[in-house]
Length: 150
Picture 1 (tube, rainbow, N blue to C red):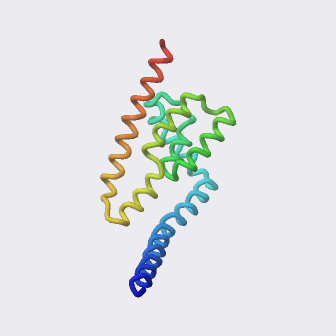
Picture 2: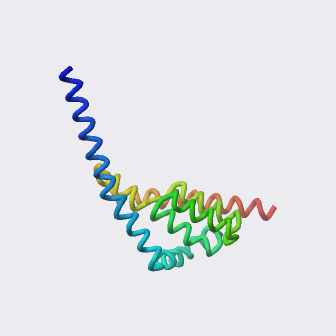
Picture 3: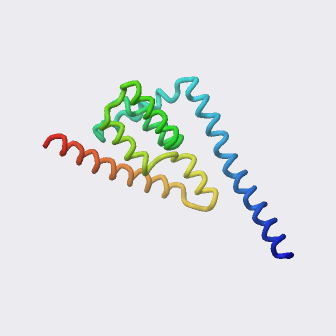
């Protein structure tokens, strides 16, 4: 019985420590995102991503959803992609290309900080995710373009 109590206590304490570690990363990021939206910082970030979207052959307006997904996560990025689609801002190919990139490289700040908190090398994580996402997206975008030409 003593082992069960010890196991329970260590499990609860370990879980609470994990939740606290996640909360101190996620809550400030959410606050930053709301402030960034209010001061139009995300629009500027979206414009900075236009060269990347051009490389993939995606519409220039896909820079903002790409930036949101990379920085804040696939859920937020998908929300912006859905809104862009509903508003008619992006074509289907651009939506798909951005989705492919975000499948491998989303929430890069939050995910990296979480893995660094448990001992991983953040630089390696970021580089590998970006490189894999770039390769995947370039291959898919070239494939889509070659099918469109046929």
